[in-house]
Amino acid sequence: MIVPDSTNPYFAELTDAIAQAAGSRGYALLAANSRTDADTERQNTLNLVSRQVDAIILATVLSPSEVAAMPVQGIRRVLIDQSSAAHGIPTISTDFEQGAAIGVQHLIGHGYKDIAILVGKDIDPSRVDPRHNGWKKALREAGLPEGPAEFTDFTRQGGYEATRRLLDLPKLPTAIFASSDLLAVGALRAIHEAGLSIPNDIAVVSFDGTSESEFSWPQLTTVRQPINRIADAVLEAALSPNDTDGKIQLLPTELIIRRSCGC
Figure (cartoon, rainbow, N blue to C red):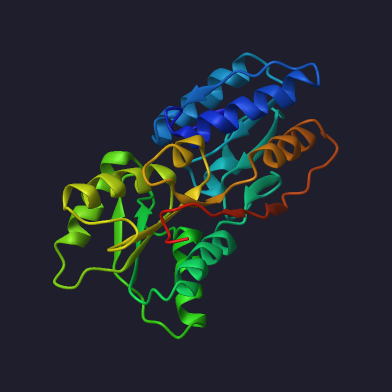
């Protein structure tokens, strides 16, 4: 398995779930970190191919065409954490767009009208994060204007710096949708340091549903990814060598309501 950031709680929890799912089927999991670098990902892939692994599970930073062109000597691959499929490679992913829309709709239901978004930057600027699309969709369907969007690194520091930029705007947003728990935790610090109250001054909803969201203060209302369902689906796809369909399977999210949204 290759992930872009093994220190991200989401990927750490997903890797553990996939390791357990593999172990229950008699397989061991080798894990590698690409550090969100395309060349490192390619090298990691070639290293795993040289070990003659049974399958490679990949949260890629490459484009679908680049993934499909990799020389993997017939080794089965499964993509995760993607919004589009690569030719001949099955993809198991959360329905990011719909999940983000659910989180933003929850904020709209509280009466918030000025909803900003924190979005993780992609190494390919032509790719649009489906969570960004979900935010737009929810606002559009409610007849609300798009709030400010801040693009930043998918880290706590990135969320902190992006939120400080939001707090420097002439008009503060009344709510923030963060496209990961990491970004949201950084946002909480920036809001607290500004002497503002969450959710009374600014509400926050995040995405991922890691354990980190449960132990922040206030506890984060979050859109939880179905980690165990993803793990089971990934192993089924990885161990089905006769299935060469490159279709994408999107799994639904769950809204976990806590305190940061105003509930």
